Image 1 (cartoon, helix red, strand yellow):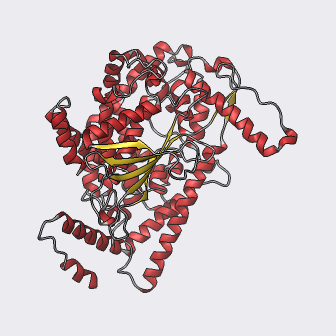
Image 2 (tube, rainbow, N blue to C red):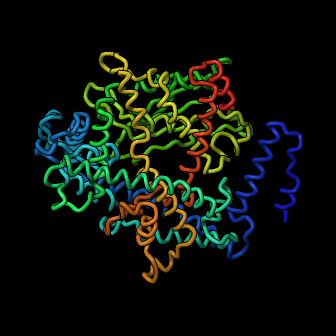
Length: 576
């Protein structure tokens, strides 16, 4: 009753920014309190709090199991013939990984067992393959040996499952789903998906499914055509191993490899050819020049002004160009470190802006898992890694450029989860803007700009494989919703109903019928987004926000991307 009284007294009649902040903060807080169980009493309240504690513990153990299982695997290759067709950067990464492993092993064993460690040799090896993302993608994209691809793919897919002793996430999945369902029931919701959507833009599970099916109607036929083209290309170019007599269809470990080969043939461009033009220091300079151009902010290095947790971590300050005011800072941890760092890429809050506690300067963490420097070479990024960096910087900008002074709605706080990806996906669009790209696409040794035909090919590649990629994302989103809405996790855990992997296969039959999961597929055991992150019943947000980000970028296109005055005008509106 007290909450209803407060809710009834929310006043936003004067329409000022200050009042609207407070009004939204109160509305969010009231909803947050209700979703946080403030309306529960007695045994229900005790049980609700117990569930929250259990979920926090399960989330942590889930993540740790995935990280440990990822670190546990390695495959050392010493046969140089296996490296045929593998780009120099990947061979150097694996050769360097082998040397670093030997050094780490030597340190653990002590000086009495020390042996001379050979210098890294990218051409002669040995090469140590791991499951961290840059290594895994390199294997799937470039390793000609089909058996190695299959081994790495299956091991990656089975991380933290029944096959990983002491790190099995299967029981945790069932427990997490049951606890979330119980939590939703305690709060008066039919299921956890309904609870999750209560604080999002999407009005209902059915509305998300409608958008998903609308996209799938276009994406699925395209995906099936793409796969058929890949199969034909592999048969024509893969030799006897890929003949109809020896191979009925491509395995999932073949798709990325042959997709890369077909893309190289179609566009006459190899991903590795672009790396020399995407040195991390230059990419950062170009990205910072872009935000100066459209948001009127200046980003400067401030290394040494604060402590960092690893020598690779960089620190930056953000200033408003007109006033010169220091408005934000951020840490950037750019490289993969499989021994002590989770895979993926993310942005997180270090310090949030809040007038109430006297904090006027937001600070963000930006974490990527890009290709590390090798020898004297700087980090030479793939174009996908460039897009990832722009993506995470977009998240960081939303946090850092906030003008709100009420902490609960400043930065990324209070933003509906299915709108969170808007600024990140918006920033990705600039990776296809010629002035932006030529602000950093220069050869790391010669300084020569990227050839125009190479950039044009990159743009042409943007929609390559879009059918299969869209269907994959749609599957993840709908699988997430199904597990958190209609699925009976208790029956699944006891063996009396569908297993979570049965649900995965059922959903795949709708959204990726051309690429059904293997019987041993345990992808869900490492699906940290929904079991250890904030995307439970919210993974659909990527596609939901993609639609909005396209609209946002269209506003710049409509005034003309070459019209600097208008671009800056729209940029300042978007900043606010």
